[in-house]
Length: 344
Image (cartoon, rainbow, N blue to C red; front, side):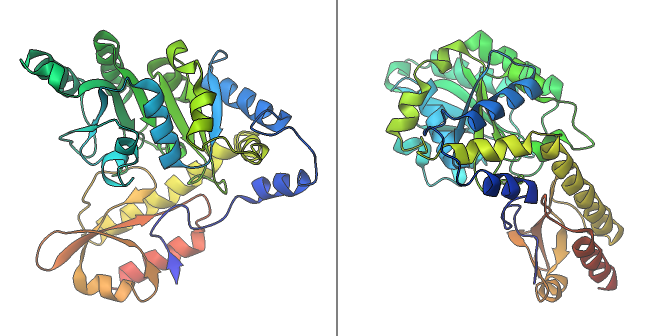
Protein backbone atom coordinates (compact mmCIF):
# COMPACT_ATOMS: atom_id res chain seq x y z
CA UNK A 1 0.00 0.00 0.00
CA UNK A 2 1.38 3.40 -1.03
CA UNK A 3 0.11 6.08 1.31
CA UNK A 4 -0.94 9.55 0.14
CA UNK A 5 -3.56 10.35 2.78
CA UNK A 6 -1.43 12.78 4.80
CA UNK A 7 1.99 14.43 4.96
CA UNK A 8 3.07 13.13 8.38
CA UNK A 9 3.02 9.38 7.83
CA UNK A 10 6.79 9.00 7.87
CA UNK A 11 9.25 9.66 10.68
CA UNK A 12 11.86 12.34 10.04
CA UNK A 13 14.38 13.35 7.41
CA UNK A 14 17.67 11.39 7.77
CA UNK A 15 19.59 14.57 8.61
CA UNK A 16 17.21 15.23 11.50
CA UNK A 17 17.69 11.67 12.72
CA UNK A 18 21.46 11.92 12.34
CA UNK A 19 21.67 14.99 14.55
CA UNK A 20 19.32 13.44 17.11
CA UNK A 21 21.52 10.35 17.31
CA UNK A 22 24.75 12.37 17.36
CA UNK A 23 23.50 14.50 20.26
CA UNK A 24 21.71 11.68 22.08
CA UNK A 25 24.10 11.26 25.03
CA UNK A 26 25.03 14.91 25.28
CA UNK A 27 23.98 16.58 28.51
CA UNK A 28 22.22 19.91 28.15
CA UNK A 29 19.96 22.17 30.23
CA UNK A 30 16.25 21.42 29.92
CA UNK A 31 13.13 23.32 28.90
CA UNK A 32 14.52 24.78 25.69
CA UNK A 33 17.44 26.59 27.33
CA UNK A 34 20.11 24.53 25.55
CA UNK A 35 22.50 25.55 22.78
CA UNK A 36 20.60 23.57 20.12
CA UNK A 37 17.44 25.59 20.74
CA UNK A 38 19.55 28.77 20.73
CA UNK A 39 21.07 27.77 17.38
CA UNK A 40 17.65 26.92 15.92
CA UNK A 41 16.25 30.25 17.12
CA UNK A 42 19.11 32.11 15.45
CA UNK A 43 18.64 30.21 12.18
CA UNK A 44 14.90 30.93 12.16
CA UNK A 45 15.38 34.62 12.97
CA UNK A 46 17.87 34.83 10.12
CA UNK A 47 15.45 33.11 7.71
CA UNK A 48 12.70 35.52 8.79
CA UNK A 49 14.93 38.61 8.64
CA UNK A 50 13.58 39.27 12.14
CA UNK A 51 16.43 39.57 14.64
CA UNK A 52 14.11 40.82 17.39
CA UNK A 53 11.56 37.99 17.08
CA UNK A 54 11.01 35.58 19.95
CA UNK A 55 11.07 31.92 18.90
CA UNK A 56 9.62 29.11 21.01
CA UNK A 57 9.38 25.39 20.27
CA UNK A 58 6.24 23.39 21.03
CA UNK A 59 5.45 19.76 20.34
CA UNK A 60 2.41 19.86 18.03
CA UNK A 61 0.11 22.02 15.97
CA UNK A 62 -3.00 21.90 18.15
CA UNK A 63 -0.92 22.64 21.23
CA UNK A 64 0.75 25.58 19.53
CA UNK A 65 -2.56 26.95 18.29
CA UNK A 66 -4.39 27.01 21.60
CA UNK A 67 -1.41 28.30 23.57
CA UNK A 68 -0.78 31.14 21.10
CA UNK A 69 -4.45 32.10 20.96
CA UNK A 70 -4.89 32.01 24.72
CA UNK A 71 -1.80 34.17 25.17
CA UNK A 72 -3.25 36.94 22.99
CA UNK A 73 -6.85 37.14 24.17
CA UNK A 74 -8.58 38.66 27.17
CA UNK A 75 -11.12 36.38 28.89
CA UNK A 76 -14.10 37.88 27.04
CA UNK A 77 -12.55 37.72 23.58
CA UNK A 78 -12.71 35.22 20.72
CA UNK A 79 -10.81 34.52 17.51
CA UNK A 80 -12.08 35.11 13.98
CA UNK A 81 -11.26 32.38 11.47
CA UNK A 82 -12.49 30.69 8.31
CA UNK A 83 -15.40 28.35 8.91
CA UNK A 84 -13.20 25.44 7.81
CA UNK A 85 -10.17 26.64 9.78
CA UNK A 86 -8.29 23.96 11.65
CA UNK A 87 -9.10 25.41 15.07
CA UNK A 88 -12.81 25.31 14.22
CA UNK A 89 -13.19 21.85 12.72
CA UNK A 90 -10.19 19.63 13.54
CA UNK A 91 -9.05 20.37 17.08
CA UNK A 92 -11.93 19.07 19.20
CA UNK A 93 -12.69 22.48 20.65
CA UNK A 94 -9.16 22.91 22.06
CA UNK A 95 -9.29 26.70 21.75
CA UNK A 96 -12.76 26.87 23.25
CA UNK A 97 -11.63 24.62 26.12
CA UNK A 98 -9.36 27.51 27.16
CA UNK A 99 -12.44 29.75 27.39
CA UNK A 100 -12.21 31.53 24.05
CA UNK A 101 -14.90 31.20 21.40
CA UNK A 102 -13.98 30.53 17.79
CA UNK A 103 -15.88 33.04 15.63
CA UNK A 104 -16.21 31.37 12.24
CA UNK A 105 -16.60 33.35 9.01
CA UNK A 106 -17.75 32.06 5.59
CA UNK A 107 -14.71 31.13 3.52
CA UNK A 108 -13.93 31.01 -0.17
CA UNK A 109 -11.51 28.18 -1.02
CA UNK A 110 -10.48 28.21 2.63
CA UNK A 111 -9.74 31.95 2.80
CA UNK A 112 -11.29 34.97 4.49
CA UNK A 113 -10.79 38.62 3.58
CA UNK A 114 -10.01 41.93 5.21
CA UNK A 115 -13.51 43.18 4.36
CA UNK A 116 -15.07 40.26 6.23
CA UNK A 117 -12.94 40.99 9.27
CA UNK A 118 -13.91 44.66 9.24
CA UNK A 119 -17.57 43.77 8.78
CA UNK A 120 -17.55 41.27 11.66
CA UNK A 121 -16.04 43.84 14.01
CA UNK A 122 -18.38 46.59 12.84
CA UNK A 123 -21.43 44.38 13.35
CA UNK A 124 -20.26 43.47 16.83
CA UNK A 125 -19.69 47.11 17.81
CA UNK A 126 -23.04 48.21 16.35
CA UNK A 127 -25.04 45.63 18.26
CA UNK A 128 -26.77 47.18 21.25
CA UNK A 129 -25.90 44.07 23.24
CA UNK A 130 -22.23 43.99 22.24
CA UNK A 131 -21.06 43.97 25.87
CA UNK A 132 -23.01 40.75 26.33
CA UNK A 133 -21.32 39.09 23.33
CA UNK A 134 -17.88 37.64 22.68
CA UNK A 135 -15.62 40.39 21.38
CA UNK A 136 -13.33 39.67 18.40
CA UNK A 137 -9.74 39.93 19.60
CA UNK A 138 -7.68 37.99 17.08
CA UNK A 139 -7.67 36.72 13.51
CA UNK A 140 -6.46 33.20 12.72
CA UNK A 141 -5.37 32.18 9.21
CA UNK A 142 -3.81 28.98 7.86
CA UNK A 143 -0.95 29.14 5.36
CA UNK A 144 -1.57 27.14 3.28
CA UNK A 145 -5.27 26.74 4.04
CA UNK A 146 -6.94 23.44 4.82
CA UNK A 147 -7.61 23.18 1.08
CA UNK A 148 -4.03 23.80 0.00
CA UNK A 149 -4.83 27.29 -1.26
CA UNK A 150 -2.65 30.33 -0.65
CA UNK A 151 -3.08 33.87 0.55
CA UNK A 152 -1.32 36.35 -1.72
CA UNK A 153 0.95 39.06 -0.37
CA UNK A 154 -1.68 41.66 -1.25
CA UNK A 155 -4.38 39.73 0.63
CA UNK A 156 -2.20 39.29 3.70
CA UNK A 157 -1.20 42.96 3.64
CA UNK A 158 -4.87 43.96 3.54
CA UNK A 159 -5.70 41.65 6.43
CA UNK A 160 -2.71 42.86 8.43
CA UNK A 161 -3.75 46.49 7.92
CA UNK A 162 -7.33 45.71 9.00
CA UNK A 163 -6.09 43.93 12.11
CA UNK A 164 -3.87 46.85 13.10
CA UNK A 165 -6.66 49.36 12.52
CA UNK A 166 -9.02 47.25 14.65
CA UNK A 167 -6.45 46.31 17.36
CA UNK A 168 -6.75 42.62 16.53
CA UNK A 169 -3.81 40.26 16.86
CA UNK A 170 -3.00 38.43 13.61
CA UNK A 171 -1.93 34.79 13.91
CA UNK A 172 -0.95 32.57 10.97
CA UNK A 173 -0.90 28.80 11.50
CA UNK A 174 2.00 27.53 9.39
CA UNK A 175 1.70 23.80 10.05
CA UNK A 176 2.40 23.31 6.32
CA UNK A 177 4.29 26.58 5.91
CA UNK A 178 7.11 25.03 3.88
CA UNK A 179 4.79 23.71 1.20
CA UNK A 180 3.18 27.12 0.87
CA UNK A 181 6.45 29.02 0.70
CA UNK A 182 7.82 26.80 -2.06
CA UNK A 183 4.67 26.75 -4.20
CA UNK A 184 5.10 28.06 -7.73
CA UNK A 185 2.17 30.42 -7.07
CA UNK A 186 3.44 31.84 -3.77
CA UNK A 187 4.64 35.44 -3.49
CA UNK A 188 5.18 35.56 0.29
CA UNK A 189 8.38 34.99 2.28
CA UNK A 190 9.07 34.24 5.93
CA UNK A 191 10.17 37.86 6.22
CA UNK A 192 6.72 38.95 5.02
CA UNK A 193 5.03 36.82 7.68
CA UNK A 194 7.30 38.27 10.36
CA UNK A 195 6.52 41.80 9.14
CA UNK A 196 2.77 41.41 8.69
CA UNK A 197 1.79 39.07 11.53
CA UNK A 198 1.95 39.39 15.29
CA UNK A 199 2.74 35.70 15.59
CA UNK A 200 3.00 32.72 13.26
CA UNK A 201 4.15 29.13 13.36
CA UNK A 202 6.58 27.17 11.23
CA UNK A 203 5.49 23.55 11.13
CA UNK A 204 7.99 20.76 11.56
CA UNK A 205 5.64 17.83 12.18
CA UNK A 206 4.43 17.81 8.56
CA UNK A 207 7.67 19.04 7.00
CA UNK A 208 10.48 16.69 7.93
CA UNK A 209 10.58 16.60 11.73
CA UNK A 210 9.52 13.79 14.03
CA UNK A 211 7.40 16.40 15.79
CA UNK A 212 7.52 20.07 16.64
CA UNK A 213 6.29 23.55 15.72
CA UNK A 214 8.26 26.78 15.97
CA UNK A 215 6.28 29.78 17.26
CA UNK A 216 7.65 33.09 15.94
CA UNK A 217 6.44 36.16 17.85
CA UNK A 218 6.96 39.63 16.39
CA UNK A 219 4.58 41.62 18.60
CA UNK A 220 6.16 42.93 21.83
CA UNK A 221 2.76 42.62 23.52
CA UNK A 222 2.67 38.85 22.93
CA UNK A 223 6.28 38.17 23.91
CA UNK A 224 5.83 38.95 27.60
CA UNK A 225 5.45 35.89 29.82
CA UNK A 226 4.75 33.50 26.93
CA UNK A 227 6.86 30.79 28.58
CA UNK A 228 4.73 30.99 31.72
CA UNK A 229 1.69 30.03 29.68
CA UNK A 230 3.65 27.32 27.86
CA UNK A 231 4.48 25.75 31.21
CA UNK A 232 0.95 26.09 32.59
CA UNK A 233 -0.56 24.45 29.52
CA UNK A 234 1.86 21.52 29.43
CA UNK A 235 3.65 22.87 26.38
CA UNK A 236 7.14 23.28 27.83
CA UNK A 237 9.00 20.09 26.98
CA UNK A 238 11.50 19.06 29.67
CA UNK A 239 13.79 17.60 27.01
CA UNK A 240 13.30 20.73 24.95
CA UNK A 241 16.58 20.21 23.14
CA UNK A 242 14.87 17.46 21.10
CA UNK A 243 12.94 20.25 19.38
CA UNK A 244 15.95 22.49 19.00
CA UNK A 245 17.99 19.69 17.46
CA UNK A 246 15.32 19.04 14.85
CA UNK A 247 14.84 22.67 13.84
CA UNK A 248 18.60 23.16 13.73
CA UNK A 249 18.81 20.35 11.18
CA UNK A 250 15.81 21.62 9.23
CA UNK A 251 17.11 25.18 8.89
CA UNK A 252 20.70 24.35 8.04
CA UNK A 253 21.56 24.51 4.34
CA UNK A 254 17.93 25.29 3.43
CA UNK A 255 16.87 21.68 4.06
CA UNK A 256 13.36 22.75 5.11
CA UNK A 257 12.79 24.61 1.85
CA UNK A 258 14.39 21.98 -0.39
CA UNK A 259 12.19 19.21 1.05
CA UNK A 260 9.04 21.28 0.62
CA UNK A 261 9.98 22.24 -2.94
CA UNK A 262 10.39 18.58 -3.88
CA UNK A 263 7.00 17.68 -2.38
CA UNK A 264 5.31 20.53 -4.24
CA UNK A 265 6.95 19.49 -7.51
CA UNK A 266 5.62 15.95 -7.15
CA UNK A 267 2.17 17.29 -6.23
CA UNK A 268 2.14 19.37 -9.42
CA UNK A 269 2.83 16.21 -11.41
CA UNK A 270 -0.20 14.61 -9.78
CA UNK A 271 -2.27 17.72 -10.45
CA UNK A 272 -1.43 17.57 -14.16
CA UNK A 273 -2.16 13.84 -14.30
CA UNK A 274 -5.59 14.32 -12.70
CA UNK A 275 -6.47 17.15 -15.08
CA UNK A 276 -5.19 15.20 -18.11
CA UNK A 277 -7.48 12.36 -17.03
CA UNK A 278 -10.41 14.75 -17.20
CA UNK A 279 -10.93 14.87 -13.44
CA UNK A 280 -11.96 18.23 -11.99
CA UNK A 281 -10.19 19.64 -8.95
CA UNK A 282 -12.34 20.59 -5.97
CA UNK A 283 -9.88 23.34 -4.98
CA UNK A 284 -7.30 25.19 -7.02
CA UNK A 285 -4.34 24.08 -4.90
CA UNK A 286 -0.74 24.60 -5.94
CA UNK A 287 0.73 23.05 -2.81
CA UNK A 288 1.28 19.48 -1.65
CA UNK A 289 -2.45 18.76 -1.16
CA UNK A 290 -4.47 17.86 -4.26
CA UNK A 291 -8.24 17.31 -4.34
CA UNK A 292 -9.35 15.50 -7.52
CA UNK A 293 -13.00 14.72 -8.17
CA UNK A 294 -12.91 11.05 -9.13
CA UNK A 295 -15.52 8.57 -10.39
CA UNK A 296 -16.37 6.23 -7.52
CA UNK A 297 -15.60 3.21 -9.65
CA UNK A 298 -12.08 4.51 -10.21
CA UNK A 299 -11.66 5.25 -6.51
CA UNK A 300 -12.54 1.67 -5.66
CA UNK A 301 -9.77 0.44 -7.95
CA UNK A 302 -7.21 2.96 -6.72
CA UNK A 303 -8.05 2.09 -3.13
CA UNK A 304 -6.65 -1.40 -3.58
CA UNK A 305 -3.14 0.00 -3.93
CA UNK A 306 -3.18 3.57 -2.58
CA UNK A 307 -4.30 5.22 0.64
CA UNK A 308 -5.94 8.66 0.27
CA UNK A 309 -8.43 10.74 2.25
CA UNK A 310 -12.13 10.91 1.40
CA UNK A 311 -13.23 14.54 1.32
CA UNK A 312 -16.84 14.77 0.16
CA UNK A 313 -19.41 13.39 -2.24
CA UNK A 314 -19.78 15.61 -5.30
CA UNK A 315 -22.66 13.82 -7.01
CA UNK A 316 -24.14 10.34 -7.27
CA UNK A 317 -21.17 8.93 -9.17
CA UNK A 318 -18.18 11.03 -8.07
CA UNK A 319 -16.32 11.89 -4.89
CA UNK A 320 -13.63 14.40 -4.01
CA UNK A 321 -10.60 12.92 -2.30
CA UNK A 322 -7.27 14.27 -1.07
CA UNK A 323 -3.86 13.07 -2.17
CA UNK A 324 -0.91 14.50 -0.21
CA UNK A 325 2.73 14.42 -1.09
CA UNK A 326 5.28 14.94 1.66
CA UNK A 327 8.96 15.62 2.17
CA UNK A 328 9.46 11.83 1.95
CA UNK A 329 7.31 11.03 -1.10
CA UNK A 330 9.37 9.33 -3.80
CA UNK A 331 9.29 9.89 -7.52
CA UNK A 332 8.73 6.16 -7.94
CA UNK A 333 5.55 6.28 -5.85
CA UNK A 334 4.23 9.22 -7.87
CA UNK A 335 5.16 7.52 -11.15
CA UNK A 336 3.24 4.42 -10.13
CA UNK A 337 0.17 6.42 -9.13
CA UNK A 338 0.20 8.41 -12.37
CA UNK A 339 0.56 5.23 -14.45
CA UNK A 340 -2.40 3.64 -12.65
CA UNK A 341 -4.51 6.76 -13.09
CA UNK A 342 -3.73 6.83 -16.80
CA UNK A 343 -4.65 3.13 -17.08
CA UNK A 344 -8.12 3.54 -15.59
